[in-house]
Amino acid sequence: MTTVAHDQAIYRQIADLIGADVTLEFLATLRSRMHGIGTLPFGRRPVEAVLAEVHQVTSEAGMMGFSDLSQACSAYENACLDGTVTQEIATRVDDAIRRASLDIDALLDAGEAR
Image (cartoon, rainbow, N blue to C red; front, side):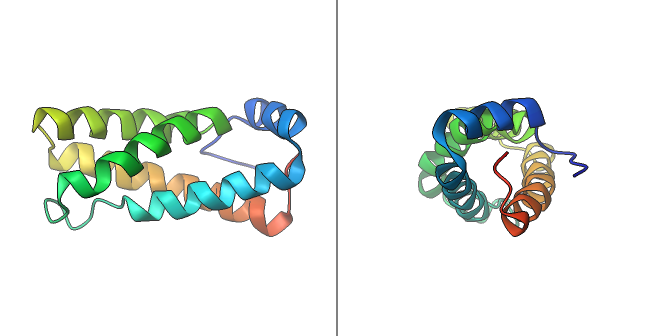
């Protein structure tokens, strides 16, 4: 499988560590959380409503090998806390979510946790 959004080695290590079924459950949860923090349309979501989800996605994405998503969410979280969210930051998160979603959907469809 060709992927663009996650590190396959990290993903395999997690799957080996926690098992295939739990890994797939984690992916499904991550996908759900990602879609809950979508930042479009820009400036229309209350910051308080997304910060906890963004923080969880930052951690879960990093653990599962989705470093671009994790870094984008971390930058978004910091910008929310500082009151410096820009369209560029929001677009970066949306792009990372889109790329990660493609990988996650392919992994879930294949039932692939190894």
